[in-house]
Image 1 (cartoon, rainbow, N blue to C red):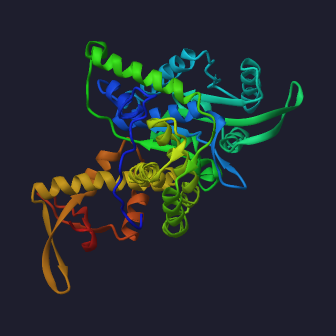
Image 2 (image 1 turned 45 degrees about the horizontal axis):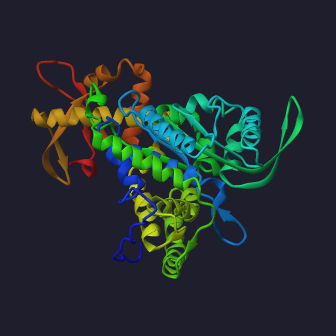
Image 3 (image 1 turned 180 degrees about the vertical axis):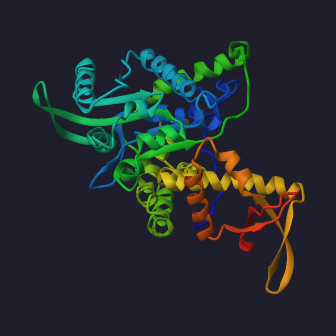
Length: 440
């Protein structure tokens, strides 16, 4: 951001029971879990966004921004508790909806485009209105989005339904053309990095689908709680009840969110001055994300406004919180996006480089040096043996493949290679030293 402001928290809304907002109470309730707090934070945000539904929006003239999100939790299988985070949010969402006699609009999580269309039509009939809106929940994205490389129709549909459609026609095999009205979709899912790579091939990274995702990548917390039930105190149960009560009030909000004059000027300055700079310096895979970041800020600003009250007014604090949240999440995205955009060979080279780096660290600790000459001066360099590198990677690569990958690293200037006599061996051994530019 080009400037920093001091925020004053608005007065407490007397119609609400969460004095510090729904999000803070939700994080209090979910504290005795093993999942990263940011997983719970983003699931609560997604939950409030879904409660706001397509009945709330920011009017931008030529189009409206609606607060739906495609949230994907990314972490290690079993350790990061992605599925548990999604299920907790889903359970509270259902309780809040039922509290005011609403039927939660969750739809199939093993879907084809035709199944999604049918589910959305069923939701409209079930709610006795013309809103074709649904929430897809899937604990693993790759089981939901299958065979994208051969058939991108599902990804194309998800891309379309991130934006609101007053009227939408889709052709089905059974009944021909189906007409959907007031279409909007939410997605809550999880994935490991490897499965995400399978679900989102490189060809889609620079397309519209990837730029619409909220990828929340966090490491495991290391917490181990054998019996979470033993940690749910009366205080936490009360926090959960307050979340359910206030979320049920969010369901009732309807109409346009308005920006205060100060918030509007602040957003306008950021959007017109800072966004072009972010787009210009972004990698090809991230340009679409930064170009769409303005819409994402408005979506989140609606959520933060609804989190604290029923005013349906977006102030500077809501814009600032949305920007802070996205900026913080972007610090976790760079490595993930680089991985998603990498080729198979690129990932293999990274693997060899990582193993070699660990061997170099061990060699430095053991003071394993060889003599070299740089600019006429003799210097000592840490070295590793080719046979050690080969031994470490023998289960991953054949000898010829490993040699080819090492040659690539040499050509890139990471390694230097030569033969020297080491130990008691009469035959010179092939060793690698780091290029001078890569020395620690």
